[in-house]
Image (cartoon, rainbow, N blue to C red; front, side, top):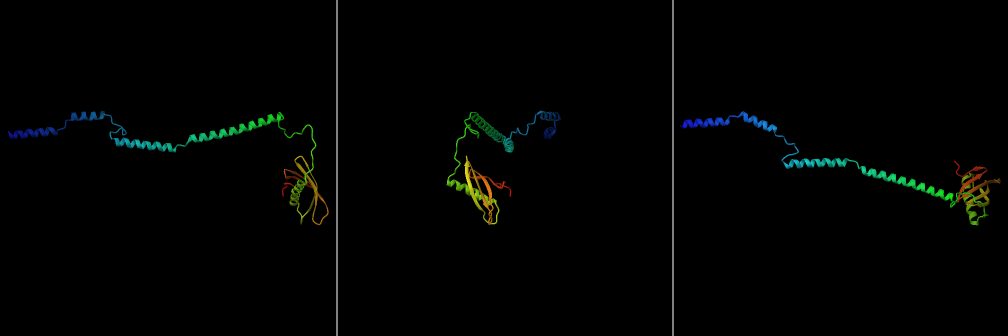
Length: 203
C-alpha cells in the first residue's frame, strides 16, 4: 500500500510539471489583444511629472527665443505718427501764412504805396562803431608791408542797412585807394575795392 501511494504522488508531481499548450496559446493571444499604454500615460506618477517639467522647459525656451514683435510695431507706429504730425504742422503753418499774406495782415517785404521820409544820419557812437567794423575787415583783407592808413569819408544808413565809403593808402605812399562797404546787422555784407569784392573771397 505504501508503494502505491508513493507512485500516485509521483504521478501527480509529473502531471503538475507538464505544460498545457492550449491554455498557453490562449494566454499569448489574450496578451496580444490588450493595447499597450503610451509611455506618457504611465501608472508611475514620477514619470508623468518628469515629462511635464521637460515640456515646460521647452516651451519657456521657445518663448525666450521669440523676438518681441509688439515693441517693434509700436516703435514704427510712433515714428509714423510723429512724421505725420510734423508734416501736418508744416502744412498748417504754410496755410496760415498764406492766408495772412492774402489778407494783408502781414507784409511780404513789399514796398508801401507811399514812402515816408527817414533820416540817414547816425549818431556819433554808431558812426564810430561802423567805422571800426569796416576798417578792421579792410586791414585784414588788404596785404601790405606795415599798417595802412584808412579814412572813412561817409557813413549813412538806409533803413537797416549802413553804407560806409572812404579810402586808404599804403605805407610811404600818397595814392588814395577808395572803398565802399555795406553793413547789415553789425556785419560787413560787402566790401568793394576797385571793383573787387573782398568779403568772403577765396584765398
